[in-house]
Image (cartoon, rainbow, N blue to C red; front, side):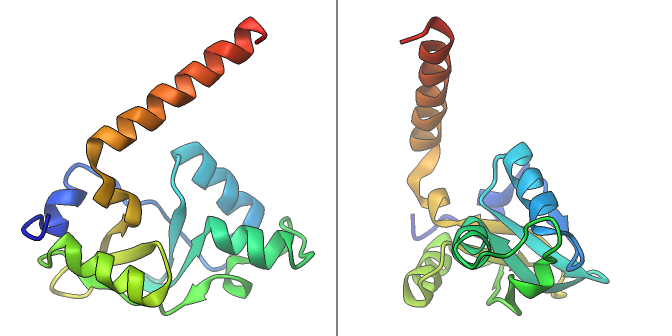
Length: 146
């Protein structure tokens, strides 16, 4: 894994972003639709923050905020740490471990946002396939009525 570059991890992925004015509910629906755990929040093309599942749970739901009227700007992590695409994934994982977070926005040499890596990326394709298989089994079991 030390040689696995972030740009290789991101290959073929589409970056999903939103704006600071987006409501928590709209952002949460987008995350559910795209099956992602975090959204990069851009303001005029610049990284303004990051909104994660943990933010929705800990700041919005546990904080008794209205997800239909609360903008991401009120609950996102502003100005998150970033990492360049030419760094090894292990560097991003170390950042996550040290900072106690699970997602790191990725930038190119000019500072433009190009992706997001997560702790899950270190698990590899086998773990992702296992999770997908488990979801299919649960869906099958619930449709049969187990």
